[in-house]
Length: 375
Image (tube, rainbow, N blue to C red):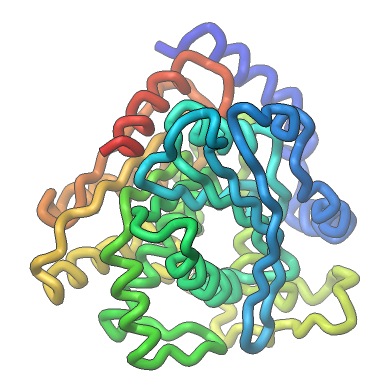
C-alpha cells in the first residue's frame, strides 16, 4: 500500500499535468517548438546547490563533440569538497530525465547533491543536447566521445564509472552500455563516427571499468499497446500522446513532423527522413531497449571472463514506464545471474521517477542505491 505522501503526490501531479495529459500529439509538438530555446537558459547551477559549498563543489566545463553534427554540452563536475572528507572510488555520470526535450530540474540537482554529500562519490552531470536539436543516434555518437574523454580525465583515473539516470536519462544510461556491447560485438555502427580498432580498444577499457547501471523509471519502451493504454488511465504524469510526440522527435528528428517549423538554428543540419516510415522502427532494440537486452548475453559469450554487471531498476506502478520495465525485467532474469544481477524495485501506487521525489518509498530506493555506490 502506498504511503500517504505518495498518495498526495499522485493527486498533486494530476493537477500539475492536467492540461498536458489531455493535449494532442500535434499540440505537444507545438509546445516543443515554442519552448525549446528557453529550456537551454535553465542550464545553470541552482541557488541551493551554489550555497552548499561545504558539501558539494561544482565546476562548469564544456564538451564539444567532433565529427558531423558535433554538439556542445555544458558539463557540471560535482566533487566532494576536501573539508568534507575523501571521495569514493566511483564517479557517477548522471543523465537527467525530461522526455528528451526538457532541461534538468531542481529535483535532478537534488539527486546529484545527495550522491556527493551522502555517498561521497563524484558526479559528472552533462547537460546534453535535446530534441529537436538532437536525435537518439546523435546522442549515441556524442555520448561515446564524451565518456571516452572522461575515462582519460586524470580526476577520475582508476575510478569505476557508474551510469545513472531517470526517465529519458534512464534510457541513456542503459543505452550506453548496450551501445558499447554492440560495437564490440560488431553489431552496431556509430552514425557519422569512424570506430577503428584503436577506438575499440578504448571502448573495451571503458567497458571493463564500468560499475553498476542505475535506472529510475527508465523509458525502455517506445511501442504502443493495449496494456500501455490501460496504464495511461492511471498515470497522472505521462501520457501515450506524450510518448508519441517525444519518440517521433528522438528517433526521427524534426523530419518526423515536417508540418512544424521548429525555428532551428541556420547551421543546424536536419537529419534526413528515415527510410522506415512505419511504427516498426520504434520496436528497434536501439530505441525500445526492452527488446535488446539479449546483447548482454552475446557479449558475455564473446568475453566469457566478464563478471556480471549490476543493474538496478526502480519503478512505480502508476507509471507508464512500468509496462516496459516489467517486460524488460523478465527478460533480464532469463539471461541468468552470470550475465547480469538484475535488481528490481517496484512500488505500488507510486508515480513516475518517485525515487527523486520526497516520499518514504524514495528513502527505501536510496538505501539500495547507496549499497551499489559502496560496493
